[in-house]
Image (cartoon, rainbow, N blue to C red; front, side, top):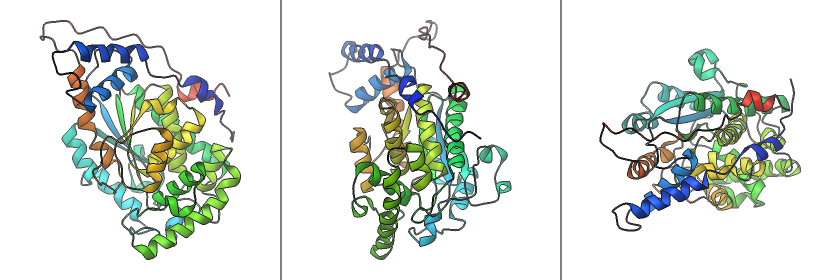
Length: 371
């Protein structure tokens, strides 16, 4: 298997959202019979939706999807989380699939679909439906404080899996992705990537994750410090960085974010994991962050540093720290309201506006076929 991906391709393929549609949306706000600025943040969000959709008036959001990448991390064996290192991630996946997890309950309330993508859960693949494990790369990952999380081949496979998922969602008509993750130990991995890319020490990016106490925080900080030493030599190679001190979910999310930007599929980021991957993706394609919005602030110091580098301002600060896309999902009603407020409302008998014709965008298979 080819162990490389031409990352430079993304820089040329990722375009900025449609500025003319944004200007048309802002003009539409001015012509509507409402106080100027009266809808506050909804106006900025509506204009952003116009730009990513490439149309004005905005199309109401009709097919949002919560997308959760799931994987286990070897570093969890150090006890860096309050959640069990063995079986904890698999249990969370089952709760989402059976509809009892908070993200599943809230998604039903807000009219969003939910999809779980198992890329490296430490469980037998037969434990989950075939569609959940279709993109699995391996079972668990290496302990990044002393060994690589993935081989180069596995890193590329995970990255390409994320690209494929972006194509699947775009082709299925998903019009907004709420991006989350499921994985014990994932905030430790995210802190390593953010610390390495921002040039900070371990203490500056070590958060409380699952609600750990001071003693566990010191264990986590030491693990991040040791992992940072392993990350710094490969900072110039994003795939090598993801393989050395990331994991299959981090590589897949990074590939997903980039290909979603290529396919003009807007994404709402959730916690420190998605923000860390966004920071890696920004290094690959500097225009890509214009296709994303930060759903929430989780309070993790690494997330704050990542958003500062990405120049993204969280839409909400609800104090939600559990991951699973819950915090970002709470921003979905804001985006739905923004779209509805700026959409064209006509009597049912009036013809709907003709959508702006979109160019054919390259799928992951087509993109990779060029390299």
